[in-house]
Image (cartoon, rainbow, N blue to C red):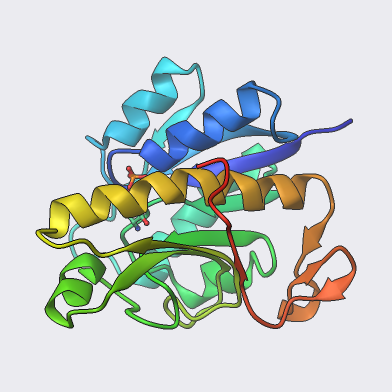
Length: 217
Ligand code: GRF
């Protein structure tokens, strides 16, 4: 069967990218990463891609460049790869509305919180400051509203006594590495799609996110 072509955008260490590459190469999901793009020339994600033999492109914004201009360059850079799905795996820059609209229903993100709680940055710190007992991560389709697109799958972790940002982030990240490949696998197998901006799983509307049970975490 034809494998889903993934283009991955990443700014940081690329551990989610690594989990996705591994899921593809092990055959657990019917997809392949055809290109990795970053806004950060020194991102570890680019090195991971190169080490895996995957084309790695650095597309930093120029000094003073508008979000729209950078978005247009990203769109142009993606075009040759003919990706079926564009995956934001720790891409830490707000994308232009045109870029997002051009990929409607074909753009997914992972966010380190139980959306709609804690959109934006510093989610682990904010959970600790609020004294919340649990935290987690969400895979969602991307719309022009930051971290506001329809959520598909979430995983929860407890906040433990003595946690700091680093320990909590690590616990959440381990769950990200499970749920992100899982959702991509659903899309690759045709179980999940997002016609008209509304997710459908197995032919039924997904009106609220599913909760991963963590059994194979
Ligand atoms: C993840 O926690 C992701 O949710 C957030 O940035 C982090 C990226 O980690 N947006 P990595 O680059 O995949 O290791």
